[in-house]
Each structure stands twice: as structure tokens, then as C-alpha cells.
Length: 483
Image (cartoon, rainbow, N blue to C red; front, side):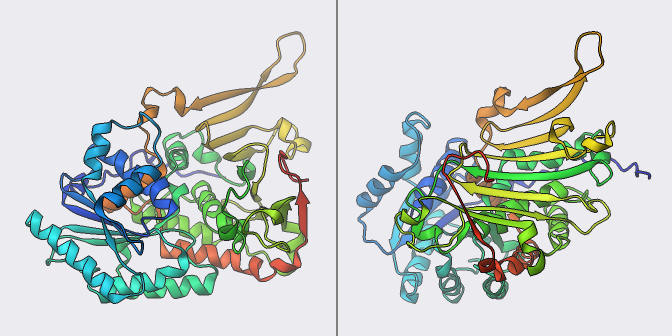
């Protein structure tokens, strides 16, 4: 066995920050919804307070509810998810001066004509063509109609040749199955170029998840060990203490496998398992992630019971919005492998559940124990590298040292790095801050590509096709693990 002595990749090329200085209008379809007040507007406010938005920028909300100018501002201000003292009152006031509202209906072309007229008024006032960034903060079943209206109304076309780009931000889930995903992708490819499309999986913007690449490729002691000869297994966990919290009507038709399995968890797996890209550019990183997802071994119906567990916490069926006879899963655990020489026979476990004793997202990489071949699968005797994505973001590794005394017994110790111990921890952007910023500058690294979306659905679809054949295991809320 030999290892190539390739140069270690350390720095990702810096994007053209000047691209964010051009006048830009951010249009939010569905601004009266929960996502806008919880995530989008706070992220935009944070970017504004950090002076990371263009001097000339505007936010236009588009929804069907009637509002006066002041009524809309009051509505948004009351729902804005910011902590007292998080921002200066002056910044909040000036930020609101950049926000306006356009009432309209998603399925009426006249509404888009009025919206286009409003954009032109702003461009005329600024004296130049502006960038247009459209965000679809709406249920996925409305995507197709809105995208068609954007295209047919001419909103997707730059207002001047070579000046002012147009881009579209689309939330997960990207389709409800592979057929729907293909239909949506086919429509997008007709209306927009790939460089205009930004598919959001907000987990990709988590600081620790991004740091996995830097950790692997900037520390030469780890990358040579990142393979089947040294790694026993990888366990990806996404646990939530909460249950539905009022989201039952949304969650019940979807379930854990679609809600987090097809997107968050597979993208985490891709970050952990991807090969070294030729360079840390958006194109090459997304290419390597897609390669890994395409190499996932499919789980056939004959192997389903051995490799997949689904569960539901007791009390789920009495949650508001949930059908009393619902068999929707709130817990999944599945095992898969990657068909490659690097990962041959290494199991990857993906586990997610609601109603657990704690909320955490982390990745455990178990290294083989060469001192005692029999204990390879004993987690108490293995080195474990853990990436803690949330909360208490950080990285830790368990190693063994000799116990003080006359014998030669060993005991485990932990070496930790916590982001909260770093003086600059407070300036780390949250996921939507980072995503909106990167969409402004045109960096697609933290957004899912078409190839990644299709590869993830190809893996998940055979499971979904046999999902009803799998027994539903019940578990109590507050558990540490599902037996």
C-alpha cells in the first residue's frame, strides 16, 4: 500500500467580493411566512449591520395579504426573530427603510407585471440596472407555478446586456420523489442557467461541516488514514429534543427520510467521504460530492429489514395536524456503503430522530484498533474523531494513554477544539447569513447541484418504494437511543 504525496489543499479561492457591491434587489416570495421572519430577514439584517450588503439594496416582499406600508413594517417587526440587543436600534430602523411590499397572487400574471414595474421604478431611481435575487419562501408545490411566472413575465432576464444578474434561491425539499425532482429540474433548466440556480440545504453552511474539508486536507496526519484500511465505520447523527412544535401538518406527509435523510444527512456523508478535489473551487467540490452520492450502494427490498430501521415516538399521532392513524416515521437509522476502493466495506450509519433526550448533530469517525484485532468493533477501545456540528460546535478526538502506575493499562483521554473558545466565535455567520452572502457573490459551493440532487434521490427512491413493508418501531420521548 502506498500513498501519493500530493500537495495539501489549504485555502479555498477567495470569491469576487466586489460582486456584492453592485446594486441588488432581494425579492422574497411568501414574505409573510415563518421562514422569512425566522431566517431570511434576520440574516439580511445581520449582513446589513456588518456592512456586507451593497450600499444600494432593496428587499421586496411578495405575498397575497393586503398591507399598508406601515402595516407591513409593523407586521414584520413584530415577527422578526432577533434577540433584544442583538442589533443596534439604528441599524434595525435603517434596514427597514430598505424593505417594501407588493401584494400579489402567485398564480396571476398581472401580479408579476406589477412586480416588474416596481423593480423598474427602483432601477430608474438608482440610475442603473440592478441585480435581482428571487427567494421562494413558499411550499414546494408552488415552485413550478412561480418559476414559470418569473420566466414568462421577463423577470428572469437581466435588464441590460452584461449588467445585473438574476438568480433564484430554492428551499428544500427539492421534489417529493425522484420523478418530481426530475420534473422540477427540467423546468429550471429551461428557465435558468445552472449558475443562476441556488438550491438551499442550510446544513451545507454550518461552520463545522465546512471545516471538515480544511481539517482533512490541511492536516497531513489525517488524510492518509481516510480510507478502509484505517477506518472501521462512520456514524452520522441528527437528533432533536423537540417533537412537531406545530409543524405536524407539514411534517406528516413527509417524514424523517425525506425531511432530513435525502438532503442533510446525505450531504454530510458526501463531505466526509469525498475525494480530494482538484482545487477548492465550487465546481470541483460539488463534483466530488456528487461522485460519492452516485457511488452509494442501493438498498434493495431484500436487504431493507437488515439495513434500515424506522420508528415513531409515542404520542406523535395526537400532535396537531397529524393524522390519528399516521404511520409517518419520526426516526430513521440506515446503513449504507460506498462502492469505491477508498471506502470498501466501511459502513456508514445515518441516524436521525425527534423526541430524543438532547438535540445534537455530530459525526463520529471510528478508527480501527490494531493492537487488539478482536476489539475493532468495540467503541470503548477505538480512537474516535468527532465533528460536532451543533450545538457546542467543535472537533474532538479520543485517544489512549498509559494509566499512571506499575502496570501497562491504558485509559482514554480527549483532545478538544471548541469554536466558542475562539475570540472570533461571535462573528461566525449563521447558516442563512452565509448562504445569502454566497448567493450575492455567486459562490455555489454551499448549494446543492443538479447532479447531487439526482444522486441523492436515486439512493433514497428504492427505500421509499418499499417503505410500507418496513415495520414501524415505537419509542418513548426523551430516549438517548432507539433500541
